[in-house]
Image (cartoon, rainbow, N blue to C red; front, side, top):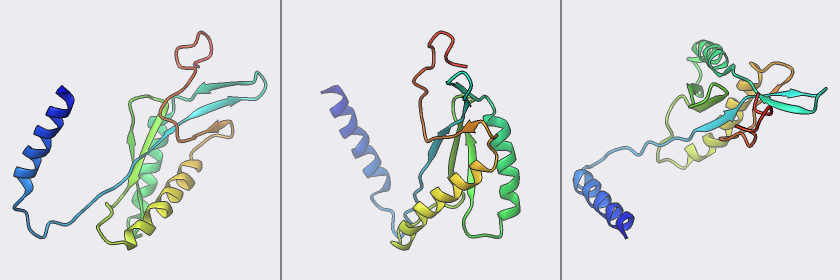
Length: 139
């Protein structure tokens, strides 16, 4: 009940703030969160890789060399040192052609991220690590 009423108040407040806008362009985007893990084949373990900052710094530096292209990626920190968040460099618009950009940009982000991983690292789109906090298994 409280949450529903608060949601309605927030909607009305937002509506009143923007109801007179005319010709405002719809811009939107997406974000993908990757967890960076180390695969220990010998001991059959998976551990957190705490290289997110290093990976992001390298990727953002490389993005500077691609500024002339229409598609690009933005790499930002997520809450853990084992996580990388990626967004498109440019927002999408309200045109249907931008729907075609979404998957293409997600593939581009994955491809670029893979160039920075070490041989024993993987980066699935995880927002949590199931073994986090498990004694001896969380890296």
